[in-house]
Image (tube, rainbow, N blue to C red; front, side, top):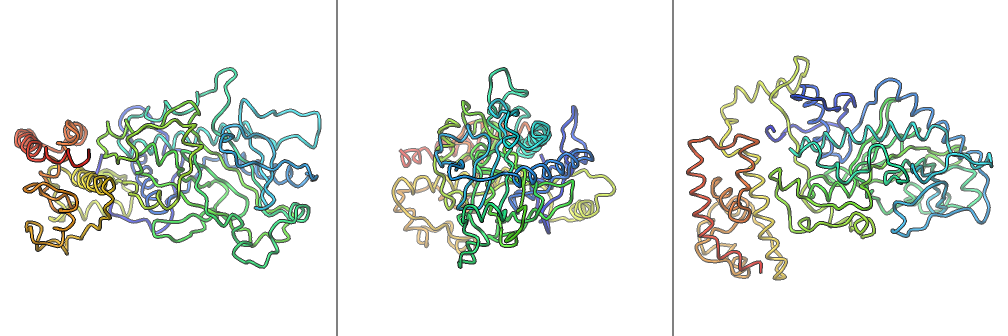
Length: 492
């Protein structure tokens, strides 16, 4: 791949969908830059802006207009369908339902299940749903392919867990297109929703418990701004004040799990404070690319690509079980995030990226060292996870000290780390794996002791270790494997 990106984006990344569509042969410069922008935006903001080609914007605009008309003409009764929270129904939702407490109405279009014809004119669904499902579904798959490329995964990595393309006879889509309406005045009046309560926070964000989708990725387009997503610093950002050709994409929990936590799911909420008294409310189209219910989520492709996989991701889980499980937001958001990359080639008009590359070329401090920075960081992350796993099993609460705290005593037994080593039962003579404790080659060798062949799988793709260094690297691995054999007994 390339070097890990150190360039932060000042705002959400904007990417043209056509630049993310893969083609045979070597990737183009526009593909590399677009993919890098996408990955960096997901890392910083848990979202990115996708610019659709001309023609698709007209379809999305007409879809939103159809949604406004659909919800506006509905009348209500005491028997109006209210969606249940039964997690077993995650892949069975179809048609209209309402949630009066949130002031939200939804129509789910699910191919293979949703009936597009009705004898009752009042029950006709919004127009153009099959066409919008096809356009947004194709876009979601292209975006997912770009994400897999950025993680150095094979092109078919997610194919096994997705629906057939197209669906076969009698199959029901796991993915769903949800047409939503928030805060419409006549709906609020009929159901007495919480707009108008004294609690201003509830009025602004009715679903005051922030949400995380269980999708792989979600594409969302609205007629009014109101979607807020939390960034890497915990700030809530308004992300859908967009142009007519633009939509928001954000990752969900299924992608978080399938990538061993490298891509954090977006935490989001809807603002409705500006909708009071609005006749039409806020309408939106949300396409959720879901894994098929009979598939299994596992991280074997991440392992094959040389990524470290934490213990919580090492056991495969069925998609149906995953969707019915509860995933606490605090546990998800406290884990490591997505690794993003830049590339060494760019077109002449690539402004800041070209300047960055020129600066790297003239800087003596940026000289690459084998093994690559990416490999070293990956090794130390996995090593740190190994120590944490042992501590969790022994019920020990760890605090990893910083390089500044440890730089004077990393080779001393009489150090602030001694008590932690003693509690863990760390063998004498074996370096303690703080991220900075081991020399670069030892980090790789130590990891090799746990997962034989891991470093070799990286060498093939990244050309990290030259032929003259290979024998020395192998010797280091073998030596460390014997020196660290006592470690295996700690985790048992």
